[in-house]
Every structure is written in structure tokens, then in C-alpha cells.
Amino acid sequence: MHHYSLLDLSPVPEGHTVAEALANTVDLARAAERLGYHRYWLAEHHNMPGIASAATSVVIGHVAAATRTMRVGAGGIMLPNHAPLIVAEQFGTLATLYPGRIDLGLGRAPGTDMTTTRALRRNMTRDDSFPEDVIELMGYFKEAPAGAKVRAIPGDGTHVPVWILGSSLYGAQLAAHLGLPYAFASHFAPAMLADALATYRQTFRPSEHLARPYFMMAAGVCAAETDDEAAYLRSSQVLSFARLRTGRPGKLPLPTRDLSEVPAQVMAQVGQALSCSATGSPDTVRRELNSLVETFQPDELIVTGMIHDPVARIRSFEIVAEILGSMTEHTSEL
Image (cartoon, rainbow, N blue to C red; front, side):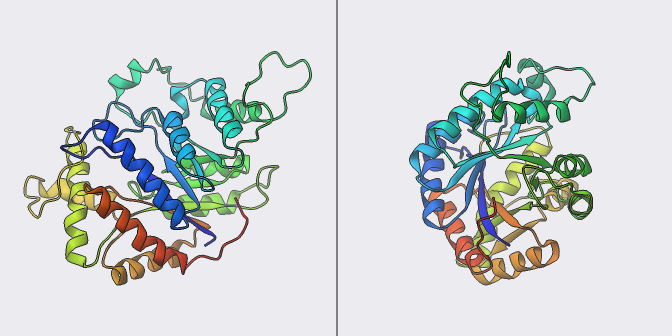
């Protein structure tokens, strides 16, 4: 494993504001840079009271301005919501302001419900133009040929690194076909992880972007001084995910030892969805992360975790960084 990174969903805790959530994101990003995390990604979600990163490129710029060396990017931008030229201009601007530090991960889902999707003015036809849109977007980051009628300014010549994100075989096949790095959303949809990884590695075609496959897997983490404390802190994310699954999204709940409001069937679904994770004391988290890395052999591991208390959240990622730092063979790749 070459690097370890962090995915921040900018959670809005119950009893707190969006402004406080974004301030927490900056605090966490600064801590992540100090702790050796290679990249810090933010994700596009819309109409979700518990997530503050809807304007993802804006938040990326805010985090990049608050840090100095760590890569900052999108994990990801939901490309079907946007014209490729607009995304190229946004990330070309970021890459111009923060050269050598910006990543662009692209997803195919809308990142929201259907009603909100319509409000985003997304094309609602059944035609899937995602592959073509990815190619068009990457073209805007190259040096435009003489006489080009449409250029991304800023963007032209910035060569922003593009990743394909996914939770199924589709993204794995596309990333392999285009010769791009691939990140799998195993932190909330692990079912197809092994198959997608095999597909990506077996069918990868070298490209001008990448000579060999580069795979990043995501894992949830919640670390504390004891197993009991970590389980208590993680209850916020479990409850939040259960409420989302039952159509009741909201801010990140306070931790609780009583999860009886969640029906057994829903709890089983949540457990499966969040199973690619490590929760507990440093020894427990080390054992569980070691198992994931040994099983899937990722080139990079990106960790995420929503904890109500921002101080406890930073401490969790601090413990995880100490563990992953000892498991990492740093290289200059990506």
C-alpha cells in the first residue's frame, strides 16, 4: 500500500450549524495534513441536512486554502449533474490556484433523490452519456489544439488527474478501459468489491494517464481508546444511515447506547452496508485494517467516519494515521 487518505463528508451534527460543520472540516483537514494523510477528498450530495459539501468545488477550494501540501479533491463530483465544461472550468481554476494538489474523482450517480435530481436540471433521459462526458471533460484539461472553438479557461493545459469512482462493475470496466485510477465506494456499498477489483486489474489498459492499475478502496473507521467507546461513538453513523435508509435523513445524531428505534431488518442492512470498516481500540482497528489490506491489496486506502464530537473525530483519524503509517510503503505514485 502506497498511501492512506481521508474522505470527509462534512457532517452536520445535531445541535450544530452548517457553518460549524464547514469549520470542523477545515480543522480536520489541517490535522490530516499534519498526520500524513496523502489526499483529502470531499463528496457531492444534495438536499441532505446532515452533509455540508453540496457545493463540492467551493469546499475543496476552502480546504486547499487552509492547507499547504496535502492533495485535495472530489470523491466525487457526480458528473451527470453537470456539463463537463463547467466541471473543467471549476477544477481548472482550483488547479491553477493550487498547482499539483487537486484531484477530480467522477461518479455516475446523482448523489441525491429523484425530486432533487429534477431540481438540479439534470438530463432525465435514459441515455447514459457518462463515458462520453468523462472523455470530453478530460479533453478540456489537455492543451487545446489550435483553432479549438471551445476551451476551458482556466482548465486548458492543467492536466488535472481524473479518477473513476464506483460501487459496481460498471465503473471498474470504464476505469480499466480508459486507463484511469479507480476508487471503490466500499465504505457504504461493499457487495461488489472483490469482483470490481478483479475486473479492473484484469482488464486494465495502459494509457497516457497511467501505466498500470491503481486501485483505492474506501473503509469506514471509528477509533477510540477502548472498543466500548468506539462502538458508542459509531452509533451516530449507524443511526444516521438507518434513518436515511428509512426515508428520514437528518443531521448526524448524538451517539447513543440505545438503537432500539432501528428495526432488526434495517439494522441488518446497515450492518452489511457498513461492513467494510474498522471500529474499536487501536489494537482492534489495527487488526481489522490489516485484514482488509491483506485481503484486497489496495494501492491506497481512503478512510472515512462520521462522529458527532469533532474532537473525538480528529482523535479517531489520529489513531488511524498512526496505524496506517506503519502499513504504508510511500512512493511517488499518484
